[in-house]
Image (cartoon, rainbow, N blue to C red; front, top):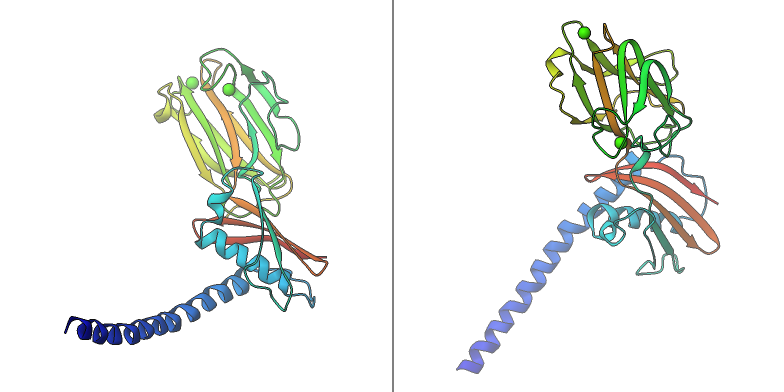
Length: 286
Ligand SMILES: [Ca+2]
Ligand SMILES: [Ca+2]
């Protein structure tokens, strides 16, 4: 009896499992295809008219694994890299894939050089005017130095190449206001050319509590050029009104270089992946 029951149960379970498996395949395969096609149509740019699609397949596979699987977790830090062969040959050839984490930092300066030339990733030194200094006075947020702007003509600006970067670049920093009265203002401005300026943020008397705050400003929607300028610009009426800034970073979403090699053809792509949103910054074969 028991034996018979087991037999009859297994006879039911196997077909049911097969049906579920089949149903799963029917649902999942089109889903994968539509997501993959979506990536291709909406994200891919500038693909050369080349006969070798195997390398492209390797890149698409890596983008999928970075976005939806755990490939990103394997290379969590800047310059981390991993190399693997795709599970199944494509067009009869083995596709080798190398994925490298390019990191998120585009430019940074914590002012710890004590002057206007420090930091990394910038096109040049800070340009300063008026009663503006890198100073150790009045408690920097971080380390021993910060920027201080005073009076009507205080300003500090710097250039960074943001061309070919994803739209969702951010500028992050710490800022503090001391002794502002009505009509005292400091603005953070952005320009693609040094001529046309957009105001990203304005501090006024309401912010005058002498406490450092973290600011995280998204540059999505602004024109980002290869000579993007950021500028702290003071409109204060005397030297006792003070604006401080420290630990200034320009960052992008996690960015990866994917290189595939198959049959002597190398394909290289750089992509950013921001909470499931893929942006292809470059995709070249040769
Ligand atoms: Ca500092
Ligand atoms: Ca004042």
